[in-house]
Length: 239
Figure: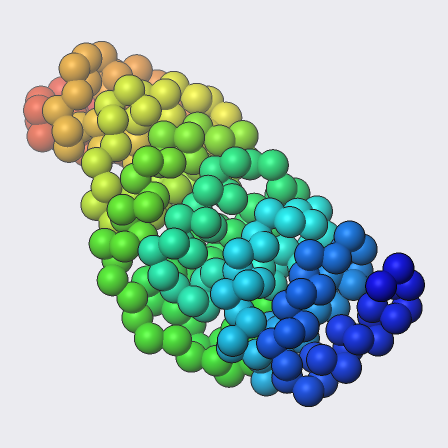
């Protein structure tokens, strides 16, 4: 119908009835109306039959925060390999606002061990634990891009997930993270430890450079490595 008022009334009526047909309004040109449909599907008692339709609309009305938060959470709640890949791709694209990218990261952080409270509404909606291998598989192709993303929280969360899920990270990517002075000390220290664990070429030079790093956590990571390879030198550095 051409009237936004009529379409809104129809969407609200379907939502109150718990009718999955309200999903048709997710594609409405008006993002406010589409968000009303998303709320009807996602909030309160939820309409489970329409949740896959909401999840599939991730990226539509991307800049409308209420809509996108619910689309992200619909993917999180469904918890399939397809929905995991959808959330990872959304974050890796880096086109959404920082707040929505952070919402996507939150969904990924809680993917394998979901909390008992809904990530959007705060309602008690517990989910069962999930196989970490599923998230690892879909995260792997995007990890390099995530580790070198512009947003600091994307970089740090990607490193946390990669380490937690034991995903091999290319030495070239780890080196790029370590060399990026804007990456933050904790992230660069983790990259150095990973380079050490993988026996990267030129490691000794990196360690000696890291000993003069302005970030204490990077210096500590360098000393840990030096204590293994050259205990006498490490003792002198500590003194």
